[in-house]
Image 1 (cartoon, rainbow, N blue to C red):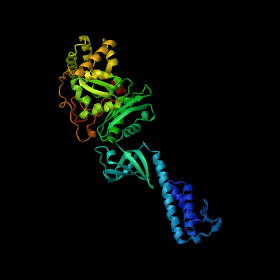
Image 2: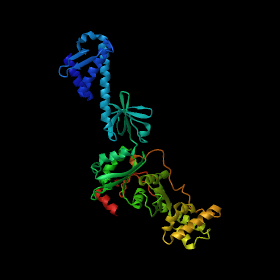
Image 3: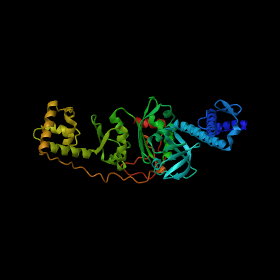
Image 4: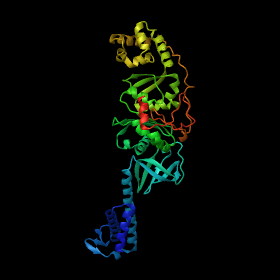
Length: 448
């Protein structure tokens, strides 16, 4: 029996990955507890288990006890406590193992649906992917393999609950690290990432080594690397953007695939007005504003997209409004109307310093202009002229309820974008045939 106990402990160690010493101590504690119940709570009971032979020795107030005196009930109680201690030890091992795997991708087998989410078999335990953590369009059956990111590890009683997600931006980052060796080696680093799971991701990257083309490294030869990631994400569009510390360059990159024709930046409020041609408007805004919204989050700047026609209409409206204030010189009116201000309120909010920074307007002039505008605004004799801008409702395409299909994805040679809408905002219906480039070709295209 003693030898059999040792073999059981060794088997538990192999199967459950529990340290043998933890099991030995659990057995000692279980037998001691059962013995104390038999002899009374005030009794000093000590149990020693020989690690080599498996022999159990019990002592009552320092005197040896015959184990046969414990009886069947005490033995059964000791057995239950041993099982409990082993389960607790197993739970601790699982918790420590998965706690170390937080923010890493794990592959499991779909067990069943539960409450709209999925229960995943991860080997030693089960993981949970909630409904909100599944990508729109995800379709799995019991027995299918699935990959997800470990975002949380919780201990609920004696059980360990592993929370997984496929929608967090970090999941995309980890997929890139699996496909792009340069990223895993930290030669290419992620500076910022934003995501609308199932539809579009924008990821800004930077190369630590100037000899490495960061976009080309992430896209891969003929798009081989990024295609694997897009396939895992059910065809989600991915814009790979080179990071730049200059805000004007970063904003222009973040708004791709749209091409911008001008940019007006207000450093103080971290707001930028982006000027685009009419045929680039819907592409810059994106379906339901998705492109500009993600670009704004990626860069940390508030972005306002306007066309040349809209900008001119706003300037003309502001010019007509400012002419209603006789104290402001005509030259100052012309400068302000073409300086990127949207309205009289915009001039007042930006204040004297911003106005005085304009070429042709001194600090004294700026102060007098602000005072005059405030005075006329207070007495209400300024009637703002509304700009004659075209309606945009017909320019921006509506986004469908279904996520993009993997078959409709294409890779843009210039910026590593997949499945961008063409000018006009209409989604493409047909995949581009092999429109991918090697690292060298991508670098040459970027230089152009």
